[in-house]
Length: 486
Image (cartoon, rainbow, N blue to C red; front, side):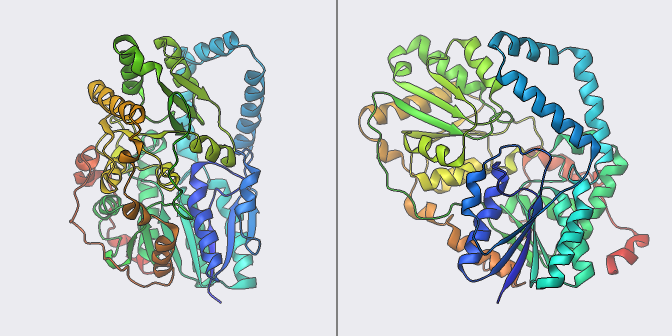
């Protein structure tokens, strides 16, 4: 029987966005007869606890949750839980005072120093304490089952370290799967930490690339960035492009019976840009009140505090509703009641923002609803264009956002929402079945059906200067030959 050990730091009952890709592949591989085992973390605190997701894990899949012991993370977890409880029971005025207190310059500087210390200590990332226990647990499992291959989904990079160390102990090959642009100066921790730590992490990643059976990236542009930044580490023949996707059949398009056009956003919002959307809604409320009065925007998810304050300060709380995160089943219900779905892009002052396309996008495809994109020139925009979505606005232009919102409203008012739907056949390319077939090729060490060709796509503008700067990247020297050949 074909078998795989899947190393995924986050997995149900964690409900954050990063769990859906490994969960989908576990389900698909199991349905095809693969024996699947998952090695995951038992954290001090879940970002979004959703035990209902456990029902989706195949019954014959063994899940090994590994506990790491770290006093600092334990302290931070207790502190965070206590603060959450206090704020959940506090009146709005007190919540506002707490927020203002957090912005005091002295506190802000102190938090920055703490983050710098964390970035220095937690090498290669915050999951460092998990590596040792996860290696031991995975090695024990391999001794009992001896899977054909190890699959590590990244981030964090620590998951790849676990796969590499177990591979050295057992001679079982490993495959890396990059969900995000780690070690491309995209995350704050990569910018805050000392250069020596960055160089050590890059050296580590270089070695992970060299020794992997296959390396999976979401998009060709992401693969191109790594090929140029980690020059010589990646064999193009081992690179597989497998974007995120959805599981199951596309749903039937239905228009909810309501006297308002509701556009829904689900998931984390704190790191995405929404200022031009709020300005456009404010403009419509002032200048075209009939349109604004028939539009409703519903945000459901994490990181909503700043958005809620921005909505209140602009006087548009009658148009924009903000809600805390809900379980996955409730998210599906909220989406079903929507006339359209909203997708946002990262701020353009963030390096590598062009390389991101949120996993929610593919869930939107499955939901079979019109999609409103307020985006920079990024992967999300490119994917939406390939499936025929025309309601895309430039995230820097309030006027362009107004144009798209008015088009969405007009199609709703005239009963023409179906004209805004993504093309069915184009969306089906992101279904779980073709993606799983592509993953199996990577797991078995076969080349991809469509080879990756270096130099065929351009480096994103925000990263071009950095990637061209040789001094920012690790390059092996003669003294490194020993470990390259080990």
